[in-house]
Length: 335
Ligand SMILES: [Fe+2]
Image (cartoon, rainbow, N blue to C red):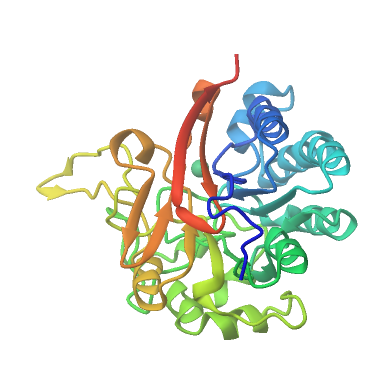
C-alpha cells in the first residue's frame, strides 16, 4: 500500500511543565506553537503562580488559604484563559492538553473544566482519558497510516516538601512521610486542602487498575478504551530514581543521607509494568540541569522537560507524536 504520509512526520508536538504562572513563558510557548505549526501541546502541571509569588507581586497580603485560591483564580481568569482562548480560536488545528500540579489549588479546577467545555481544542485531562485529536484527524484522512492515540492524565504526587495537599497521595499502604517528619503525623491534617477528593486512596491503589480508576472518575469520553501502549500518559510526578526526578542536592540530616530523588516509586513501577506509549511528567525543576530530560524505562520513553521559569527561560521538548523516540530539547529565553 502506498504511504501518503512521509515516514518521518515533522515534530508536531511539544511538552512543557511547571511554568508556575509565568505569563511571558506562556506567551512564548504559544508564539513557538504558531511558528512551528504545532498540533499538540502538553503541559504537565503547576500552571498557576505559587501563592507566595502572587503575594510578592500583588498588593494584597496573603493571610489565609482563601487568598491563595484567589490569587490563582485571578491568574486563570485574567491571564491564562484569555491568552489560550485567543490562541485556540485562531489555531483550530492545535490542541492543548493540560493537567494541574501540586502547586495548583484544586478549588479552581471548575474554572478549567468550564474552559474545556466551551473550547473544543482545550483539554483538561486530570483523572481522564481522551482521544488525541491529531491522531483521530490523521486516521480520518489516512486510515491505517498512524496509530490511534489517547491521552490520560494523573496529577498526584507523593508527599514531599509542599504544604498544599490537594494533589498529594501516599505512595502505598506503607504511607511513607517526607524525610524528617514525625511518622505519626497525618499529612492531611497538617497540610492545606482546598478540595479533599484525592484523599481517599493511594497512588498504588489508583494505578493498580488504572482503567478502572479512570472509568470510576466518570470523566472519560464515552467509547474510550484504555490501551496503555496507545496512550500518552501525563503525570505531574516523575518516575523515582531516574534522571528525571533529581532535585537540589540536600546533603544529610545527622547521619542520614537525604535522597536527591523526589519522584514516585509507584509511578515508576506502573510504567515498568504496563509500558505506556509515552510518559510526560514534571514536578522536578532541576532535572534538566542535574539529570536529563529523557530516559527509557523498558520500551517506554519518559520525558520531564524541567523548569527554568524563575530565569524566564522556556524549557521545552519537541517530539514526533508517531515516532516519540524522535525528540529534541530547547531552552528559549523570553527576552
Ligand atoms: Fe513545580
